[in-house]
Image (cartoon, rainbow, N blue to C red; front, side, top):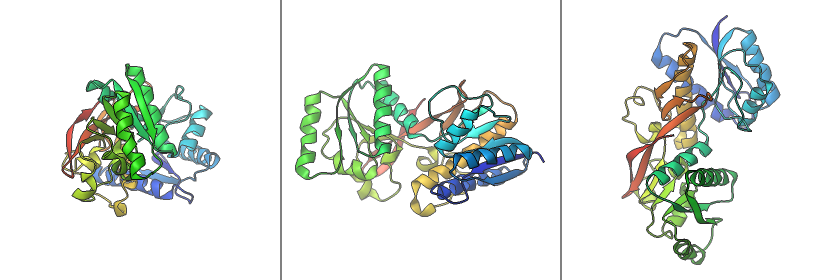
Length: 324
């Protein structure tokens, strides 16, 4: 029977909550739209690539006209590597390697690397040429830092110097300002989450400070955000622009304040909207999405334009938009 297949790791493993959030967003968007051209069928995969590929083949054999998923990077990479994509397939992560995608294979993702590159373009576009970076030791922070530096250098800027933040006493943090001044930097990039960014912000001096959405911990009160005063960062309309016309029509799920799950819920909403465009056979797709302004590139990867926000007096205000 013809249908849309939603292929997610729902049968146990470390990504169940993530998969459930995507599924919830996808189904919420379907309910908002009302009548559908094709019914939806959810296929519960695992985080095992072989099982996911088997689930994909089962969906296609069962009549799927379009598949949304997989979600994990390893499964997306394994599926893309098969090169056998019989129906339009919207992967929710980017495959490893960065090579050309198979025909009919599309990518819609919230990858932090893309955000960091967007911030690099924002900083360079605002006249910054020498940036001092602060990163932590975890893999996510390293990915942010490396993607930012790579893009900033590609544009013609340079990394003035950098620090690896692994905690530390006041005396150690106080040396940041002298290091920044000696570097002759004109801006700072924080490849840090909100907690670490708050720990270092007061030691950075008065240069413009940029960050990704990881620096935003939600509406936690003015005091928590006050420590990040003047930091500029990118984020999605779902979290930063609740009165946005594309955001207001969809129901919300709090997820206990877990912003990562809220982001994945928003990804599910946009995945549904994109799936409807793909079913119509459109090859030029632009959407005012809840995860950002979406545009389909010739490489079949969706780019996201994101709101630029700024912390001021403990509050967050949107001050512009960063274009991919």
